[in-house]
Picture (cartoon, rainbow, N blue to C red):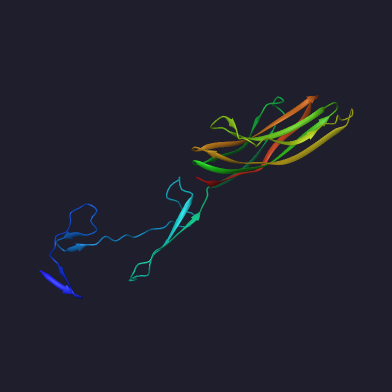
Length: 215
């Protein structure tokens, strides 16, 4: 059977190419024409834990011809924060002690790590060069996060007999850090003296946080 339109002749009973990628499929009820509908991600949502960008899709109006779809992207990085403090009084000098401020980076990628850290110490009598430090430590890899060691306070003087000094200091430890998969990071603290004995040492992570910046 043949028909014509606009000076052209068409065969309406022409066979349909059975190739798997054919755009048309002939059925008893007529030709099936594939139709693709795109679906976006709700704000703040994700398809999987490996995703750091959301895709927004705005469909065309009903009956629009041609169908125009608008597709956009939003960066939605994973993030987290915590805090914690630990007393160093029961630990030996020059030994790194875990602070109960631990975060788990949930997936592979590059992260911005930031820790606002405070330290304190009490010195009485003959003490020389009292130091309190902090750093970020990769628990998963058993390795220090590079470039994150910070000196929270350093007191080089020696108190006179019967004189007590109570010192406090703070610093920000930050770094861009790349991991290959889920990784646990914690804050650690350390105390040191060249001579004498200190008391009341403490390291506190007032805000330890991460934000993913790229895959």
